[in-house]
Amino acid sequence: MVEVWSWNGFYIGGNVGYSWGRSDTDVEYFSTVTGLPIAPPAGSITSQKFNMNGWLAGGQVGYNIQSNNWVYGIEIDGQWTGQKGDANFLCAAVAVSAGPCLPGLTFLPGGVTGAALSLEEKLQWFVTVRGRVGVLAQPSTLLYVTGGLAFGSVKANGVLASTNAQLVATSLAFSDKDTNAGWTVGAGIEHRIAGNWTAKLEYLYVDLGSFSCTTCTGGVATNVSWRENIVRAGINYKFSGPVFARY
Image (cartoon, rainbow, N blue to C red; front, top):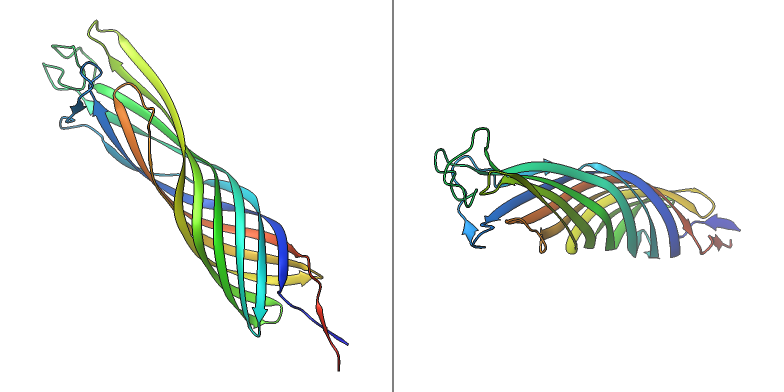
């Protein structure tokens, strides 16, 4: 009998990697006196694009069906991440009159530039549910493409620093998080290394859509679009054994 490796069956494994994330964040300002939207004056910063890079680690489970040189499957993975980034925004003051970003002030105090927002964003975790279609470069080496749904928890922490009508410096902090749904596509290579163990190297592009801060306070609201490029390495154990061909 000759041992013939088969990709059929359930598997479970773990992975580690790195993500090059990107946040596109827009900020809207509101009057703390009237609650009405503010049209930011010239010099304001209402939009920022910044990096959200960081490590990630997690696990995956899946199932494969092999048909000749083709392998079809489904995989679910969960990841914890250290991805975070920050940016600064400004609702600018207007010379002499202070302007709409500093409601209640009738003149511009020296050294005051407006209402300044410091914003930190984090991707706490994400999950993907993906199909896989692959072809065998050789019996123990699989080249595949993958794609499906992605879900992730995005958290935003912010501090809005301003000056009130009594010329006192103020700061208001807020925090909000939400679970977003999006999509993912990618490709990879997986190779049998010994027994029922395989190792893989994979690339994924993940788009988690838009996240809006629903509990922001202090006259600001944020809208975040999150995308990332992921490279990760993993190892899997397949539960079903090899197929033996009898001659």
